[in-house]
Image 1 (cartoon, rainbow, N blue to C red):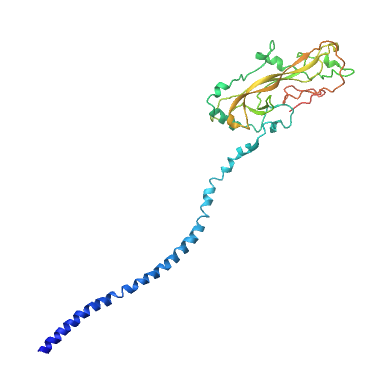
Image 2: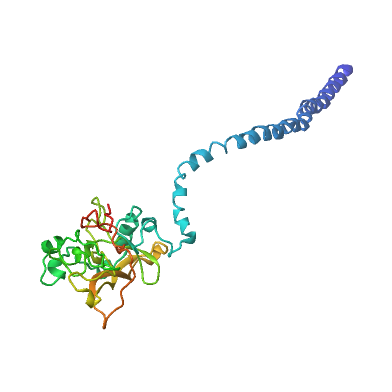
Amino acid sequence: MVAKIVTAILVSLAIAFAEPETEKRNAEPIHPHVPHHGVPHHPVPVHHPLPHHPVHPVHPAPHPAPHHDPYAPAPHHPPPAHHGYCDPKAPPACALHTEVPFCIEDAEYPAYEIADKISQDPIFLKKYSDIADQTADDLVQDIVAPQEAQFDYNYYTGASKGPSPYDASHWIGPEGYLCPSQVDYVKIHRALNVEGFWRVILQHVPHDYSYGHYNYTQTTRLEACLTPDSACRLLAPCYGSKCTQKYIYHRMLSFDPCDPYRGFFIDTYKLPSACSCHIPDGPTAPAAHIAPIAHPVLAHSVFPHHPTSPIAPVG
């Protein structure tokens, strides 16, 4: 009996000591895996660089393409770059093949810039003034426009110089001025000012209904001698007369293509205004024979010229 009791006690003690060991053994497999967590850490740094490095070089290439295309027109803004050096004394293209200091027609006229400057100038209407319809009715005393338009000097050669200077054309002819001249009412687009700088002249004639659809033009009356330095018609040689070109200082609203930020301003130009007969004081020595040359003032002739005239027709 005692032996059974002792055995039971020993078994109980054995079980009691065995339980902590069992729990320890059950807990031991968990701890050994802790260091194994380092294994997933090693592939992680390997996986992160591999997918990320190739992705970055691939995406940047397609992104710039769509971004640059919309801005491709940007290079069109640099044209003001030709203002890097703009010579205001250099003649414009319209004046390269003419001897006159102005252009009645200009294929490169900056119409858009002129319209833009009109819209930006709050006092533009205070600067602008013009009488568009100018004729002899208002500007020539005792002569009306149709009458002046019919003055025809086709017959006149202007040959009033040399050993036999005065031909028949000097003594005959229809109504007209003593000194044959060409009169035009024009709208100048570019001109050389009195300081030697080329300016754009305000001539705004819009072709649509955009801003500034009103006409803002500047009309000028030009009169140039057809046979400068020739004798005045119908006067005897003893007078020693000579046709002399006259000029006038004309002020016009202008624009400087080399300094567009300046806006509109008034500038001054020397333009042909009349052809007058001059009679000197006292006798004059006979002039050497010089072929008459038409004064190259106007780019477009309004009067037809006779084939025998020394003035070649323009047009």
